[in-house]
Image (cartoon, rainbow, N blue to C red; front, side):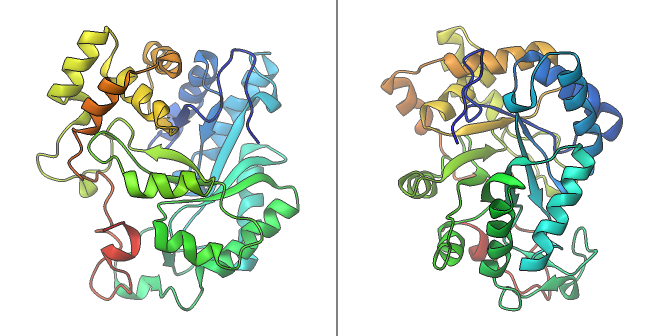
Length: 316
């Protein structure tokens, strides 16, 4: 399913993320991203802005900036819609909002189950225990969606090795993508190696630190990877921006970074970064920065009465 576009950009090298794009700004941000050279757009039901994303896509197509086949559109199944019978129903809803006839990839957003209608859990009763609707049942629905031609590829997001193996045990189609947090403060070597050995493409969340995350999920005095002293030093030596350095570091590891940008100048710089090759020495210097620090934690899923633990989600 690899696709290389007319401008030489591989859709698996950089992605524009739409999480936290406000509805009033989403159209402009996505339009500017496509015009700047982004061709992979990461969406989700939970982002609540797919209609605006779709409008930007169709405007770009109408203006001749791209064709539909030039784009790679990803969306995700939210946590209150697990279960075999819910997948196609929810995927079709995303297609309707986006104004598309198919997706290029559809992912399970998290390996956690909420009761229907729950957006974020406030109490233990908002969850469904994982043994009540096993992940492999939801995966059957994902396979059916692929078989029906509603999505070209299927995958997961925020899955560790144990959760991947849980669905792969009886799978007809194995996951083709795993969207996980990776950046110089969390290089995720074990999980990335596992995915790549199993031909699961890795796309990275929080690639540049995700500074616009909700305050409730931010740690006090959390480190800023984009302004890390070593990252700044190396980028200055190479005469590139810190964002370009991190994008290049991820690409050189075979990882496709999801970038959140609203500035067209920065968007163009981000796209240009996919052509930067880093030496083994520079790669080693960045690898050494790792702090095993997560910007996205499981605290909002591990609350009193919840059937989930941190170990359920992340590699230990």
